[in-house]
Length: 270
Image (cartoon, rainbow, N blue to C red):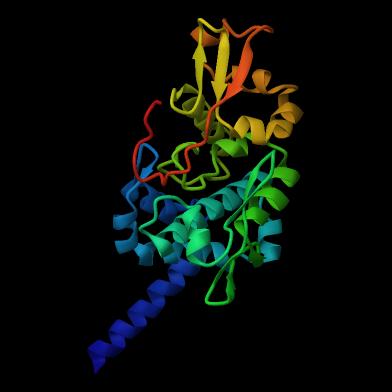
């Protein structure tokens, strides 16, 4: 009986500790380092480690509105990016195995994605008649709301598109560490450099003097233009020096098809 009591209180104490918000996001970094390699997610192993992911999500959910508003701007942004990526991992894990995150909409009897000419969105989805949303900033939110009602309009930093990962092969790589307020800016710049140097997602054809860019730069062109005047000017600093010198006014831009296959396998060049 004493052993049972000890076990019960040990679990209770451990759960309480994990529910306390940690601005270093150490637990999420441990999860990402264990299950993400070069942007590819091992969802089978992540499912086995689901308790750990659940404990991290409890930390995200424990943050009240007042606590969130007391964060610095970089801390707020890191919190929301990590929340988005962690909730996406949770969403995919709940329905794994799937070939694409877009398949989940059909599995739950509704459209998971709404698309228009400018961008895609992840909408609320229903499971057994109940809306499945997440808790962040002390309120119920969808992934859409984190991105399109908080991160994009309030922080006005287009580099966020290098960090948000929707579980597709054509997304930027899911970083193998969590974002933190103290390291956020260099982390986002590093993501940009990695994204623009990956020929599957973005590449330059010297013969054509043409950039073939991710569809992300098309869908969210207004964000990139707001920050640097044009998509071309925005991406230039993230390109290798050898390519930067070749990007001139006459350089044209084309956009690559988006591969929505699940990011549990490496993308290949067409």
